[in-house]
Image (tube, rainbow, N blue to C red; front, side, top):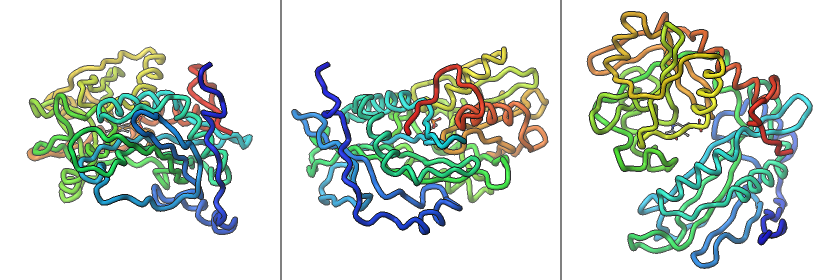
Length: 366
Ligand SMILES: *Cc1c(COP(=O)(O)O)cnc(C)c1O
C-alpha cells in the first residue's frame, strides 16, 4: 500500500458552536428539502502537481471566493447526491456510494476537473456522517441528504482547466418527499428547449445542465405542470429525461422501457437499480429509443399503463399527466400504478433495512 490510512483520513476539527440539542430536534422534526444543514462539512483541496491534500471535516460555513474564481465565470463544477438512512437498530447506511464516487470521476473527466479517488469519496461521507450523526433523522422515510460537489477554485480568468479545485460535502436532513402519500406529478414536455446535446455535458452531473433546465422548468409551471421532460436535442422526437430524474414507461403487458444511455442522459443510480430489480421480476426490460409519438399513442390506446420518474431525492415518482404544445394526456387513470408503487416499495425497503440486500448495495457508515 502506497497510501497510509492516516493520509486518507479526514481530520475532524469540531465546531465550537454546535446547534443546541433542542433546536436541532425541532429542525429535524419537519425537515424541508435543502433548507437546513448540519454543523459540519467535509472538505479536501487539490492543487496541480500536488494532488489532493488537507482532507478535513470542519464547521459548516460560508466560503470566501476571489471574484475571479474560475467556477463563477465558466461553470467548471460537478456534484453528486446520495442519502444516509437510519435503520431501526440505530445504524446508519448509504446506498451504492461507489456508484456515486465513480460517476463523480466520470463527471470530473468531462469537466476537466481532478478525479477524487473512490476511497476519499467514501472517507469524506463517512467522516461527515459520523461527526454529525445526531443529524441523521429517524422518522419514516426521512434521511440525511449528502451533497458532494467540486469546483474550479483558481482565481484566473483565462479559459483553461483550473489548476486548483475544492471538494466539499454538505448534508441536509430531509423528510419524506411526499408528505401525505405518493402523489403523481404532471409533466410538461419541452419542445422548444433541450437540456443537453450530443457531445455535450448531459451525461455529467454538472450544475450547468441544471442552469439550462430552469427556464423550461418555469415554462412548465406556467403551463400548470410540476416538472419538465426533455427530448433529444438532435431530432426533438425521443424521450430523454426530466431535469433531474430518469424516466420509465410500463406497458400494459408488464414490459418496461427506459431511454437508452444516449450520451446526453444522466446515468442514474436509481435507474440502474430499478433495471436490476425489474429484470429479477422476470419482466421484459428494454433500454431503447422511445419516440414521443409512440408514447402518446400508447397512452391513448391503453398499451402504455404507467410512466414514472426516478432519482435519489424522490426515489420513484408516478407521472399522472403529460402535456405539450398540442397534447394533454392522462396516464392510466391518473393515479399511481402497481409497478410504480411496487418498485418504490422494493427500493425503499432495501434502503431502510426492511428487506434483504442480496446485491450488497447497502454500505454502513455508522
Ligand atoms: C442526479 C440525476 C438523476 C438521478 O440520478 P440518481 O443517481 O438516481 O439520483 C437523473 N437525471 C439527472 C439529470 C440527474 O442530475
